[in-house]
Image (cartoon, rainbow, N blue to C red):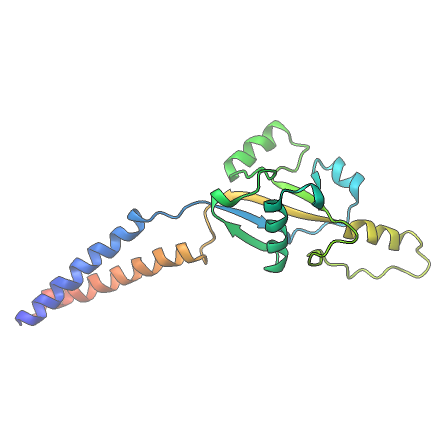
Length: 190
């Protein structure tokens, strides 16, 4: 009986400690880079949409590194706020909404990376499964023009629910509930 009470007390104390983990270690914002957005537009159409176009060679070393890492990781890449690129304007959802209200014509939080023809970088994420028709002489030049521009959405915010920081908080909360339930049962049963 004494051992049961000690174990129950230990589990309740562990539960209380685990409940404080999310408060002591809040999830920090991350900078998100996403190249999965699709466009079949060329330079003129992108400029008309208010999308900033940055030539790959004009990116800083860090900007080039982030772009390549994003392509290599399947189109999504996140870093801590201190590891972003200076040329990217990272906006939170609220900031993006405010800027959108002030300038509804622009696509804020999206840049187009102009890829050089001879660059040794991974292929763009945008699909090119449209087969040009044999008699359509404009289709192939248009396709080549489109392959030069890769859209990248950039933002600042909390990581998605499946990210490691979120999972640590979830596991801590689940273990706390389990420990509290078992400990409470052991203390209340005779």
